[in-house]
Length: 441
Image (cartoon, rainbow, N blue to C red):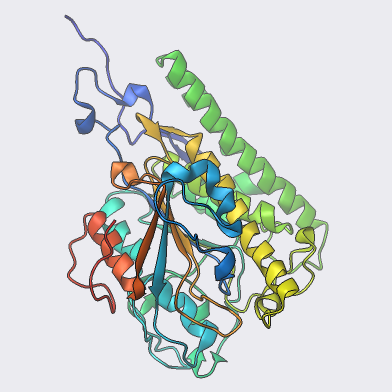
């Protein structure tokens, strides 16, 4: 038998003036007669952390049953189509109620550290977050070890935000070291430029492309056409879909920038949509593209900031997010806030559908990724930290079974889950923050 198939490198790029496109995994990147596990198609590990602020209505979030087919309460109902990739982890916490309220929710959520340093100055200190822990293992040699994005920005706030805790604690969910929080990018255009503009070309070339509203595809079209002549029909279709998705995101950004330019009173960055769902959708779509092109394998996404003043008029919710979260145990206000929590789940479900629809080797991006979603507060009305809302979504490249409600002993530290995720991801640690052991996954 003669095998003549030649393979492309997995790290294949199309380059133009001020643009670079990393290609998705193609059949042509898989050498013939080679064990799949030894090729670029082996199951790559990817991780995303998604944060919703101000806690949840836990009675509408916590399943009553365990075992396969357990009932999904209102807030988790949008994940029904992804049940085989769903793990609900309950009874995790970050200590009893204490002074600090919202200021401690974000820095404790993924660090496993129950008591960040109490300071109003620049000397903030918490711990390494699980996204950064896994980035050191998953993203070696990639363009970006991780991406950090948000849909709400308060980074101009300085000084004390809550009872002796610096506002800086509320500006991010991602920490590279215990004293190095990472900034979150709110502008989808800048995220797009990082992914597809990369470091190619000069700053002047990239500026000219943006000023002339040239597509990142303009400079790579001929390269793409030449490459396609050597590809199978399946690979050509995959390339076409990928490039079309890039252009779709680009056009959405252009529409946003045009609308914002027509509203000079708008204070948001040029690429930030006024519509929250569009903003969140763009960020999630960019993360899918970053995974597909293997630009990064780790991201953190803060869908909102603690003390958020966002309103959701499309839901009929006209009070700010933070105000509604203090429901005063009134049934109608509880129902209103649960509706807001459910809306966040619906937006995440759209992201999961994109992952599920994107082929990746012998599976999909949903099969080959893991997304952590939750909040750093439990009952927002009284600022409790136990039990915390937490779900795991995705197949984790075959390392995680789904359709499970994993009930922990009451008061299990959140750090125990972080330790389990680190070990499950190949990072050998004895302890994670204030963990007392590891959750069984």
